[in-house]
Image (cartoon, rainbow, N blue to C red; front, top):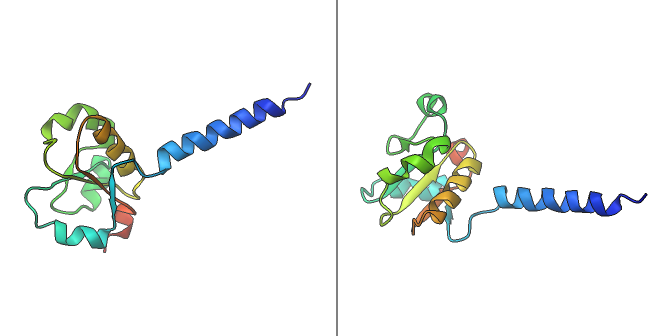
Length: 121
């Protein structure tokens, strides 16, 4: 019996799954930490760090509030959908996921910090 079609289906599913997780969210602005630095003075921007509390405590940017990705969907009510939301994590993967979640919830102006805290100097 030829299982080639089953293997192709599995490979295609894995490619689709990874692309959904890793590719930038549609409608989400992508910035570097260099782009972020001048933005930190803007009091209208909501800065969210979606890492775990332990990661956040070990090193964080003062302007960022810690709302871990695991609880972001139930804590999003704390955020204004009208103001820009800038999201960061350790490497940019969780913040990309968080950005997609916020866009789906109706947030209009969402920005992901690609590279995350690993690129913060």
